[in-house]
Image (cartoon, rainbow over all chains, first blue to last red; front, side):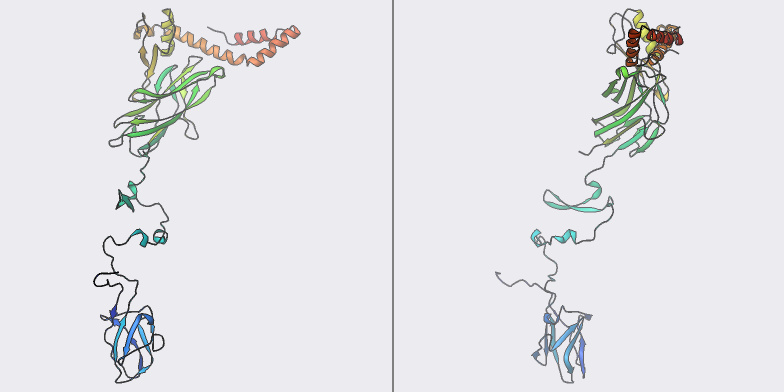
Length: 289
Length: 114
């Protein structure tokens, strides 16, 4: 129920005046000089010689051509042609008038699918505390960066029973150029929790006499996490030690890996480079929180 | 060249103490990729941290100790597993033979200490 004038809903148009041509039944419909195509004859009011014409029988529509049931003659007058319009063409809705209930469920599924990963500058709609905003894809979800991975490019001699900084010269990737001189330094603006991981392939120099082996993660020179193995009576010639820890780091904190090996023969040992696979490696990545 | 660990251990033992990881720790920071081990932690009561000269004085003894340690390691391998040794001992007792002793003598003569 409305108070006052009922709102107009529709796209109502009155066609330009049409001059009758003797012996012609078909006429082109225009509005403002441009052809228009009614949805059907039933969407029209047509008056000929003061009489409303019945849609479908007195006239038909094909595109923008209206055809009368018989040729018109000199003296006939097409009084008006009114197109009731695309009744669902409601024009531009006013602000805040389209509610969720008015949207079809295929509003998303009905669109063309993106078949590859979106670009960082592609945008999504998001409700920001109830206000719809657009947001770049790059800002959604976050990335596990900075991230790097480096491996040993040659065997490194480790003095017996001496905690020794392990060098990893074979850089596999380094997203923020934060790994250099065998250590990872947290770049500006990248403080957060980092997962630090790696593996050391330890080898005795000679017989099967590895007694103990340690791998330690050091933050700013201090031990933050140590993995220690005592090999007991097995005393293997080669043994891997894997390590992983998630540690909160601040900007400019630096991370290094130290190895400590004790051999039964009190001889130097090695942290090995392997000819296949990563062998001894050291990596880290920032976790999404 | 004897390792810093060996020489430091000899210094400690020469002063009637024993190596204790809680009291002594060695470190090598590989500065510019060059190995240069040093004593990082020293917490022995009544025993001063050795000077470079004191450490160097154990070079010869350290080399000998490491050579003997290497020989011990080789001998351990050649002695075979404890299961194999038990088998030899059992058979010797059963048969009145000296296979186990002969085996050990050969390992030791093949790998003499200096």
